[in-house]
Image (tube, rainbow, N blue to C red; front, side):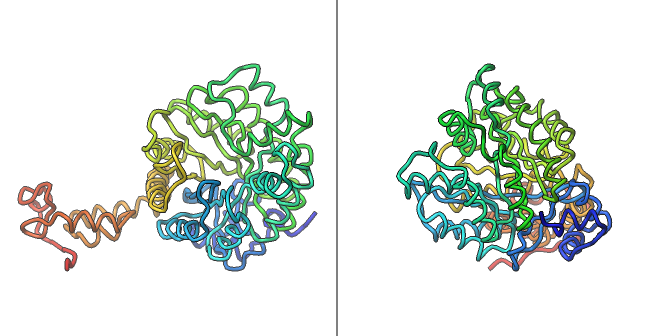
Length: 435
């Protein structure tokens, strides 16, 4: 076991350059950040092999972070498109990106993403293991070997992946509970379904659980953050907060403690579909059962009836979850449940999720969040359109709308025109240059 991990250094009182950078970015003291890292309530994502990756802090007292998912599928596999998604996600303000590729040149896509990205990159290694078993060994997913799974994790850690989703909590006992209770939508996690099928076929325990110490050894060696996946997350609101989900969460709490003892940083992935009235309970349960480890929320989607608009249903849930203590929001795009996201879907998903994160940060009392809103209010009072546009979460869209409907006087918008309440109460006006 390495004695030089970020977590071990924090517990010994050391402040690393990565901690200094994160503390500066977040506007908090290095001592507070170090103590939160030492307690496992904050993680710093940066594989030791990623020289050009900016360390990113996730957890207590820090701004809510946003993740964007990209990646190929069997139906659509194009390296250039995935790189364009990466660039768009970063430009739109994503704090991290996960490559979930399952089609085409999976390894080449991941390596290209790692080479270009300046932000943390995550993966789900079981995907590559499963696809390699099918394509290269001409066998079924259920014929993956334990060594296959761990060699993929080792390979991706050596390449520089910063965090990985590992479904360690989907055990035979948890599956038995799901089967006894009955679910409307069963298992909807792709990685979780791979492991559930493997366990049923081989009549053996989940290797990621049974050989968890082997996983911790790899993570410690490479400064790899473990994102303990919710393989039994609810796929519809009817299945939210059921026995299978809670059984898995209880186990993830135990695995979090073991990881911390080993010196490995951990975050916990949260439920996918949760009605509004259960979101607070889910956040409180995760924080209580998992030693306040950072909570990485997949949505949560608050209703199942809005395909095409699930970036909105998830933003509603994400804002509520983050305001109640969740730390990391995984975006959802308009294509969720319908197709592989396009480049434009990626951009939309990031922007909408950033709005949810920012709204939560205001509720959390993050000083920089409310100050930005205050600045927007000052610009609106001055009818300073250039200031409003540049302060907005999406200046490109704001400018397009403003310039696309010019007012007669050029100082007010076309909603109120000469009857603008703000204009009637003061005279200072600043307008942007319009070609």
